[in-house]
Every structure is written in C-alpha cells, then in structure tokens.
Length: 263
Length: 264
Image 1 (tube, chains in turn red, brown):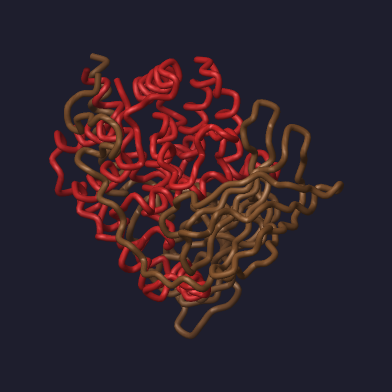
Image 2: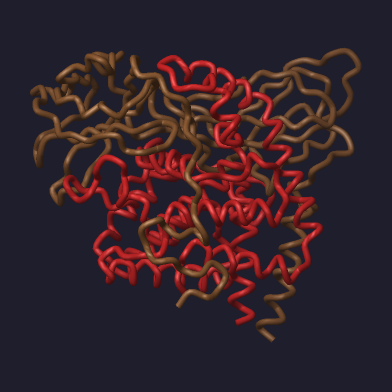
C-alpha cells in the first residue's frame, strides 16, 4: 500500500514537473554530448506514442504495456526508477485492457480531465489561468489528433457526428495522456496559459473571421518573454512548500481517481 | 525495509524536485543567469505550437555590453531538472542560445537565438521539432454563411484512395466541437487535390474553422495527412461560456462515478 502511495507520489511530482526532463537526466544534470536523432523518428516524441498506440489498438497486453512505457518515456515521466513506476503503469495497463474488454465503456471523460486539472490547480494554488474548462480540453484533443490520432478510436462512420457527443468519452490511457499533456501546456505554453475570458478577449470578444490574427500576435509575444511560465514555476514551488507530506502523497491518488482510472 | 527505503528515497526526491536545490535545478544563481530549453511541435507551415518536452540547451557569448562581469563565455549542451544555472555566465552581454540540436532535432525556433542577457535573468529557448501533418489550402477559403458553396476544394499532398475516399472533419477552434464531417468525392491522380461537399453550415457562426484531412487505412481507421482553415462570415455570434463539467467530472449523459472514493 505504501509502495503504491510512493509510486503515485512520484508520478504526480513528475507530472507537475513534466517537461522538465527530470528523468532524462540519465544520471547527470547535463549531457556532455546530446544523442543525435533522426528527424522523423525521435525528435518528435508524439510520433512514437502514436506508433505504439496503433499497435495496442486490439487490446494486446504486451503492446499496451509498451504504449504506457513509451508515454512515460516521451512525457518525461520516468526512466530511472522503474520500481516506483510499476504500480502506476500496472494500473494504467489494467484500466486500458478492461476498457477494451468492455467495448470502449469507461468512466473517463473530458469532464474528468477538467476536474483533475482544476483540482490540482486548487490544491497547489497556481494562478487562475492554469485552471481549465471543457472547451480547452477539447481544443487540446483536437490539436493532439494531428499527432496521436491512434490514441483515439477514430473510424469513419463509427459515431463521429456533428456535436461530438460520443467523443467526450475517453479511454483511460487517452485520459491520462491528455491530462498530463494539458498540465505541461499550462506550465509552458502561452496559448494554454489563459483564462477563458482572456482567450475570448484576445480574439476580439466575438466570433469573427479575422479574430485569430490578434491572438496569434499576442501569443507570439508571450512566447518571447515566458512570464507566466516563470509565475507558474514559482507558484508550484510555493504551493508544495506549504503542503503537508501526507497531502502531497494523497493528491496523486485523488487525481487518478478523479480522472476515472480504475485500480 | 523496502518500504523504508522507498520513503527515504521519495523524501529525497520530493525535496530535490520541489525545492529545485539539486544540481541543475536551482531557481536562483549567485552570478550569471539561468537557461531552459523547450521543444514544441507544429504543423508544417503553421498552426498552434504545442509543447512536447524539455530539451537540451547550449550557448556562446557573442559580445559584452558595458559593465559585463563573469568568466563563463560558453555552456552546454545542458539538460537540467529545471532552468539550468549558468554560474558566472557573462552578462550583460549578447549571447547565441539555442535549444535542442539545430537541424537534426529542431527545424526552427519560436524565440530568437541571439539575445541580450542580463544578470540573474531566465533565458528560455523554444525549438520547433518536426511535425507530421502538412498544411492544405482550401478554396474557397472565405465562406459566406448566407450563401455557402456546394463544394470545397483542398490542395495539399499525400492523399490516397486505396482504402476509401479521404475524410474531412471541420472543428470549431473555440469549443473544439466537431461541426461537420464528410468524405471526399474526388481525389486527383497525384493525390494533391480533393473535392468534397461542403458540410452543413446552418449552425455555424463567424470565425475561422479548423479542417483536418485524413486518409482511410485498411482497418477503417483514420490517418491525418493535412490540416487547413476556413473563414466564415455572415452570421455573427458571441463566444458562449464553456459548459459546466458537472459534479465529479460526470459526463452529462453517463452514470456518475465518485470522484474521491476508490474506483472499483
């Protein structure tokens, strides 16, 4: 039980710090000579996730486990402390396989991602723009479709219809992936470091054919100064410093439950 | 015993991760500055960049400004827990700072490589890595919603009809909602042009809409090959507020699961 808490504890820390390449350090704080990478294979971590997702579509346990391993690797969630990752990975694999056995029925959804990300923001006390909403989660999913479409069951004539009703349901692994990816965007990407009101204001306040230009210019500027990224980083440090160890260890369990990932 | 080790290890890790006091993760420097490398992915030719991972960062000083101090004139490649402290990094000075491996890992940058570095500043370099999907052009690119066209033509590359006609999805960039989907009715022999019936635009409002073009695989699944945008005018509407996610993250039309209680 304690091991499970330890494992989950490490997961959330890594998720929070995701993108900080915690586990990419490979035993040192700095690589003296970075690995050379082939353009299409390794420079875009999402390519490999999608390849593994495609292989795991039929619910094969080995392929599903490889997909989970790849997610941890690509999302900077793990590489060194395998013992600590195992129970988390087992939970994800089990949940995904059960999801497939139940013909795609799952308690995971976009709404649960919203709740988990907002719960995290509330617990740590990060700025309002790190909170999210259903529209933002859906926007992220739409962007991810370009790179990891095989994580999502997309078949022609299988329910993809106007209004996207069926699409709000997600597999456990997609839910986990979207949640961690959204946390990463909230930490680093100015396009996601916005409240809904700010997003609307930057689009001119109302829908218009030219509304995106002002937004794109503003985001370009925000990429240059990274002020909100620094603000989030400091808020995370401050928030965790104020949190009791017990709360810190319980938080990840609460988050995985909120995401609807079964044990 | 094993659990004790885990507790000890995790405690060390927590302190290390949260307080950033480990090597490479310091939030402050005694002198010099801090650097951080980020990797983004973007559709070739445009589209919203998406953060995918931290990456290595390296730099070298180009020239000093008046009053420059510090003895370090080059660093990296470094990959750190958080921002890498460049203790003794010369500043104020003009530096060339790049994330990732130019040309191999990164095909472009969202931030300028040459920059003026001041003491105790944080310098973030954002590299763009290789995307997968290519941009298509749509015709017409501007649609009058009061007189929508019967068909749309998309021009790009890599279209194939081997397992079926390519599939086109239209999404609202604000809500992320699918507003329509249709199959192509014609694809050129070279796979560079498709024609498709326009989706039902009767409930679409002013704005720029995203288009995703996918080929059909042997198993009937969709493989994205391109993206585009279409601007619509003629039906103004404000942005609606996002829907309430509901209690405990329950989907509106699904049974509610408890948030806090263990999930069986």
